[in-house]
Length: 143
Image (cartoon, rainbow, N blue to C red; front, top):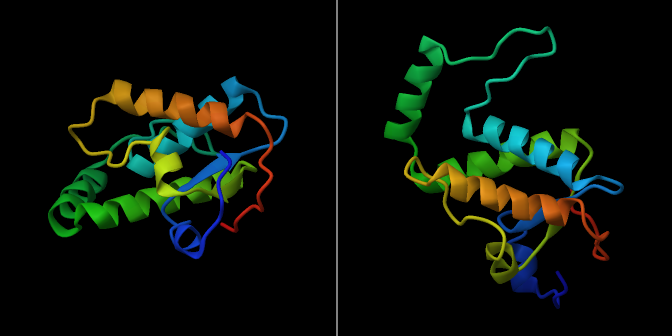
């Protein structure tokens, strides 16, 4: 995770980053990443704070269809990154910037409907290793 920071790399920190939380086990990091990823992709089927099941509704399906027809994939990636950042920030993770080449070593560039779920899950395993690993020496970024 060591690299020399340049202005060009810093410019892309909104796209290329990783998460870390001090004193977090791999299992906890993986659970948190899976939940936040599912929320960010709009497939979360968990429980709300009131204990209600958050399943798909007709409104959700119509929204998904509209999203698919209206927004381009780049905007989808932007929304996914923003939702992932919010969710993990809420869980106490700090965000750290990376150059694109390092980011690509443990992340998927694009997650689309055709992306095999096993590939997504393996990417989350790699991210959890980093999120629970050695404390970063660089400065944490904001939300």
